[in-house]
Amino acid sequence: MSANAQKNRMTRRVLAAAAGLATMGALVAAMPAGAHDRGHGHGHGHGHGHKPRTVDVQLLSFNDLHGNLEPPAGSAGNVSETQPDGTVKAIPAGGVEYLATSLRTARKGNPYSVTAAGGDMVGASPLLSGLFHDEPTIEALNKLDLDVTAVGNHEFDEGATELARLQNGGCHPVEGCYEKGKKFKGADFPYLAANVTKEKTGKPLLKPYTVWKKNGVKIGFIGVTLEGTPDIVTANGVKGLKFHDEVETINKYARELDRKGVKSIVALIHEGGAPASTSYNYDCDSPGAGDGISGPIVDIAKGITPKVDALVTGHTHQAYVCTVPDPSGKPRMVTSASSFGKLYTDTTLTYDRRTNDIVRTSVKSANHIVTRDQPKAADMTSLISRWNKLAAPIANKPQGWISADINGRGSTALEKPLGNVIADAQLEGLAPADKGGAEVAFMNPGGIRADLVHKASGSEGDGVVTYGEAFTVQPFTNMMNVVDLSGAQLVAALQQQVSGSNEASPKILQISKGLTYTLDLTKTGAARVVTDSIKLNGEAIDPARTYRVAMNEFLAGGGDGFPALGQGTNKLVGASDLDVFNAYLAAHSSATAPLAPPATDRITVVQ
Image (cartoon, rainbow, N blue to C red; front, side):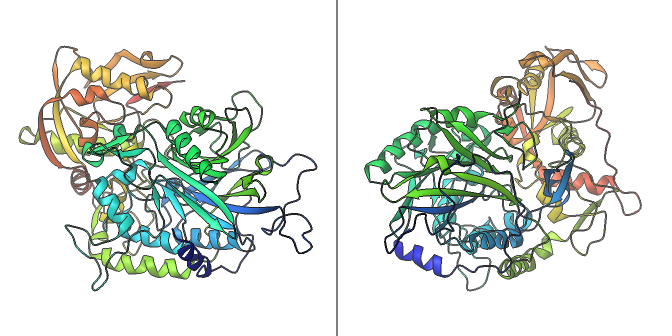
C-alpha cells in the first residue's frame, strides 16, 4: 500500500467515543523490573526537542471472522471467562457493529496503530455474507480499517480466481453486480499468501509481505496459510496451486525484509494451537503441569527465525496469548483471538528508532472481549441492514421448527446433537434406491458452522428455522455423494478420526442412526476405536461386505485426513447437503410438532 493511501486511511479513521470498554485479558510477558515505562504511543524518554529513541506501536489483531457480520447466535457466540473465584462465565460477544467500536476505542490515544488479521476472514459464512460471495465482509473490513491479513484455507473455498476478485474488485463472473450502479471495489488491504505459488510459473499467487510505515517507523508483515490447506479444501479450490512449508517460507521472506532494512517483522500465520484452558483470560504461560499450549503452532514458532518479533495466528478458533521460545531460546509472543469477531488482541510493540527493531523484552499483549453492551458502530449497522434487505426474500423463508436449541458448532461434545440431525438428514435423503441406496452417512465436524437456535433471529418467531439459519449451519452447499466402501474401509475411516494426521487433534465424524461404536480415549492412535464394538443396525461390520455410504463431496475426496473415504467407488452424486438438510427439517417438524434435540448415544466415549 502506498504511503499516501496509508495516510488517507489514517485520517479517515473514525474514533468511537467511549474508552476502556473492552474487557481486560490477562497481561502476558510482562516487562522485567526496571524496564521502560509504557508511553502513551509517543515513545519513551524525555526528548527535549529530540525524537524519543523508542515509540510504542499498537498492533490490533483478530482471526477467523468467517463473514460473521451479525453477532453469532447461541453458544457459538459466547466467550468463556474464568472469574476470580475459579468459576467460568459465558459472555455473549462478536458482531462487526461491536468489533468496529472496540477497535476504534482501542486506537484512541495510539497514534501508531496497525490492524492485522490471521486469515479466514471469509468462507463458511452466514447467508448475509455467503449469499453475496462475501462482498459484504470485504466491505466491512475496509470500513474497519484493516491494514493487512494473511490468507486462510477458507479464502480458497471458491478458488484462486475468486480470491483475486476479492482482492482486486469487480462483479461476480456469474451473478454479476448485486447493487444497481455499484461495482464491487475489492479489499483495500493486502491479502498475503507467501507460501502459495502457482504450479505453472512457481510465482507467488499474491503478495508475500507488506511493509507498514508511519513517521519513519517500519514494520514488515509476512502472511502464510497452513501448508495442509489442500487437505481441508475441495480439490477445485486449490487447483493449480502449491502450498509450501510455513517455517521455511517465513524465514526466507524475513531475510529479504531484513536485507531491505526492515528489522521489525510480524508473521501472520493461519495455523494455530490449543491452550490448556478454553477461557480467553487463561494465563498461557503459567508453569503448572499440563499448562500452556499444544498443537502445530508450537513447532512452527520454535522454527521461525528470531528476526520475526511476534506471531499472530488462527485456524483453531482458540483464544490464547502465549510466549513460545524462538530458535535462540528467547520468549516470543504468539496470539490468537478465538473466532467470529468475538475477541481482538491488543499487542504493544516497542520500536527502537536507532536499531529499527522491536525491543522484545517489552512486548505486551492481551485479548479483549468484543462485548455486546457497548454502542454499535452506525456505519456497520447501515451496512448490515442494506445487505439484509437484499437477502431477506431468500433468508426469511421458514424451513422447519425446533423445540429447543440443537447445538452444533457451540457443542464441545464429540458427538453433537446437530451432527446427528445432519447425518440422519443425509442418510434419509440418499437412502432411496434411485438416490444412491445409502445405508450409513458421515458428516465432518468442521462443516457444522453454527447451532440451530430456538430464539427468533428476526420476526419469524421462536422455534422457526429459516433458510438463512439453515444456510449458516451448512454454508458450503457441498454436493452429496454415495459411494461403495468395504467394511474394512469403513473401519479404517473411523480409525483415521484419531490417528494419522488427526492423531494430535481428533476429528470425530458425526454418524447417522444405526451406527454405534466405542471410543476409548485412554488408548492412543487407531486403538482408540474399539473395532469389535462397531455395529450397523446391531450387526457387526463385515470387513468383506460392500456398504453404500453417504457423505459430502469434500469427505468423499478424502478431505480432513480421511484417505479411506476417498477410496469409494461406484459414485452417485445427489442433491446438496443444504437441500437434504432442509428437506429433513420440512419432513420431521411442524409448528405443532417441532423437532426435538436428538439423544447423543451413538458413540460411547471412555475417558
